[in-house]
Image (tube, rainbow, N blue to C red; front, top):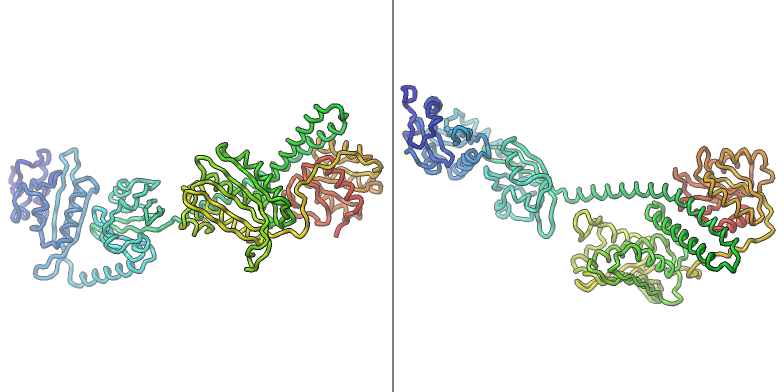
Length: 637
């Protein structure tokens, strides 16, 4: 070995490719310097280090001879050295205190050696000239950090070089549901124990060590729930110490999911409304022409009349389906009116028979002569459908869903008094619920379903609708034995028929008035004209509001009634109505609309004094509405 490398002590275990370089490198170090192989064995030293140690010893045995390290500093130093040897970090440094004649600061530096030239690390220890006042300032800084650390509302933990938690603040202990010993028993990887979606714990820790910071999503089992965590980490806030900040974002993620769901449902509602308008026009043509065909067939053609009747029934069911779909997209307040619960149950059963899997049997049982209820039928059906959906999820292997209607003469009313109510009970044979689930059943966002399978708003919505109806709700469930939900609804003050029979198709003779029919769909306009003319009316036609204005200005004196669609190109029915009134026309007006309420597609309300005939209309519904408008002479309020 050359004179310039005299101070280097090499052993037979030294790495040959580095022999020519290490002498100069280690000799140049002002403090103790050693070379470690990949196992942490000392294989070379400079003179300063050689004076206090023997060769071929593990660094763990001789680290204490480099300086007067306390146990904590020794553990950190060893962890940092092994992190470099294991290629977790490229380099590591640690400051530690040494008491000689006066307090001093020393620095341990560890630099990795590339694997392609043998691997290992160079360890160097050097004294730093730091005055006592610097130590006071450092202690003040440490005190300030500790104050912020303890007072922070964010959960914070400090991890050592291996990722083990060595300190936590009160917010972390509250979040994790553990005391200080319980938290310090954790390590960085446990924040991903339930499976983070973005990365693994090992990848996150490696990125933190290489880049100095990392942020991502983790998951942690806290009690009986899995919490979603926003984890942010900063490496080496002090040598060998890493700060990890944790925020529980479970609820905020749920809120974001609910917002996305609400936006999606709003978009679906708008799309459904637009499609329903066109679909109702098509159904109007089918129903009107089927009525015309049925009316023209002689009684002896029973088979053909029966086939046409089936076509009418199918189109009518299609119309009912559209109305049910639109009921879910409405944002209007409840329209409570006398309703037959028996009819609602029958319609819901027919709908559920098509929607539920074949291994679930749907049964209804309504008491005879059941009084009517004061309710919004769409809202009641919405409640039943939601309860049926819950029952379906509880009967994965199949079962029986039973809906019952009954009269209860003496029930506790919402105001605490006793009085009569009509009850609707939904009972399933599913897995049931325990007392803990029942206690939270009506809480918004509470769900027992897996993430992405439920919003947690179904029972909360049902509870809200029951309150709007001034009703009551109770739930009885036994784990493993099914669930029974009973809803009490107020009675209607008038008698409600159990069904609405289809009107007779007989044509009433003697109608002579002239009617202006305004409709942009040619097939609908043609069907309406033929039906009205068969009743004896004279019919003028227009394809939109602008054309209707021209006809009215020319022949307004002979027109007894205007029947107009609401939504049309160029000029719709609402604008036509306003223009007619401005020009002094006072004849009655009848709107027709493919929407389910009195609102057009741009949400501008119609004159409440003008009747609306919903599409799809039948022969008798059109003629009855026309006759009523003519006889009652609706005029603007």
